Amino acid sequence: MDTTTINLRDIKELRLARHWSQEQLAEMSGLSVRTIQRIENGENAGLESLKSLAAVFEIDLVDSDKNEEIDQARKEEEYVQNVKGLYKLTAVAVFSLLFPLFTGFKDSEWSVFGWMLLSWVVILGVYSINSFDLFGEDWKQKIIRKKFKKK
Image 1 (cartoon, rainbow, N blue to C red):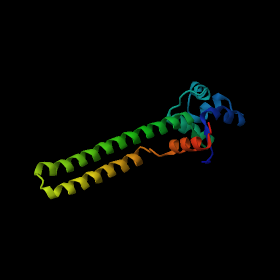
Image 2 (cartoon, helix red, strand yellow):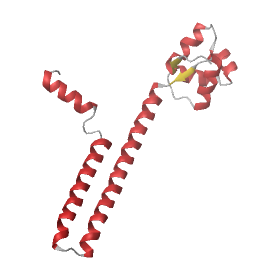
Image 3 (cartoon, rainbow, N blue to C red):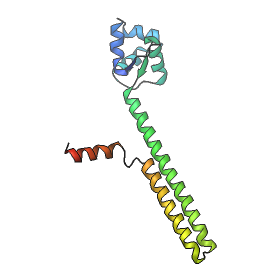
Image 4 (spheres, rainbow, N blue to C red):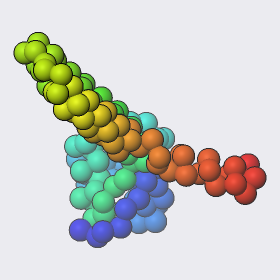
């Protein structure tokens, strides 16, 4: 199979370049003529239809709309996992800090508790910065625009 990728909207151009009718493409791909018409008009195509067309044209098909949906879903899932991780890490921090409070402190142990608290604050801060991309590409572009007065 050729490694060329195309957009679904280019199906008609590929078909016409081969001088095929919609009926011929439907017969070769095992799809109905109506399905070919819908795909050429940019309507949604099922995975099996895409596979059939890819086999007929000997190419990999790319649907930019579906790729955007997949990317958005991936970003949403990553964000949810990051929030979930932050909640878990916060719970561990709280429980690890509450345990010494309930077991009782001597005056000399308060400094140890302070260092533990500071450590957890730093850990949670670093996790948040990395997980939520607080200093990512958007921040970088904003700083560049501000420094060089770009719009």
